Amino acid sequence: MMYLAQRLIFAVASAALLLVKADMPKNFWADHADWVIWAVMITVGLTLIEPIFQRIKHGKQVLMVRQKDARIRDALGYVLIKLVREDAVKADWATTSIFAYKKQGFFRRRMQPISFIGLTLPDPILSATAHRKNHGPLGYTWAHKDRLSLPWSQFRDDLDYALTVQRDHGFAEPGTILGKILRSPKVTWAKRLGIAKSVMSHSLWTKICDRRAWKRISHDERWNMTLGEFRRMRHYSYLITWPIRDSKDRVIGVLSADVRTAGDGPLDVDLDPLASKLNSAAGRIADHL
Image (cartoon, one colour):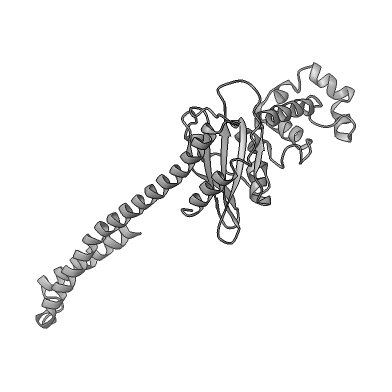
């Protein structure tokens, strides 16, 4: 839009200068030529200077964003240090990751990741993990303003097993009408003759079957998550979530940690000794959201 406006201003200015030079209409420019030329020069000058001011403004905005991100990362680093130094946790600093989420959107509100600290976590995974309210552990913290500390790897394995069990039932439950039709002699013979083999082996059919199997798992067991949301949560090992509140006690973000230890033993993190530290870090992050 700005590009078109600049071209229009240059076209009008060029036309005005040509009319002055050609003295068209006659005897009109004798009294008006000076102020027309000055007006053209000022307009063209402002048009040329405007992108410079835009670049300066953009540079200031980028600097502010970087400073804000640096302060948020300082708070995340503070949480990481506390988790590493806490005797009850003894997190591995090289594999533990800390995330900061911010509530964004109006009609489709999501907890969007805005910053993280983690040496072993790739950047693309950060942009793919938006969370809905009351969907998954982060959505639970958002909806209930409550902290969580849970071995997510165990929940993940349990859900994988539940999905496998439901997948073994096939496209539909055996007792339903659809299940009886799919297990009828005609369909069985169609499978044996290879008529349905190409359909059954197609990736789209597999996705549809997985979604139907996933929906047969209870909402509470799968944390109200869709299959896609569950798969985007697979990278977590031991999950800690903490609400980030504003001055009116509204949840505006979530602080989460993917805690990993150097050993293979089970991990059980008590958040009470860490409550003051996590509250402090959440407050520092809230100041920059």
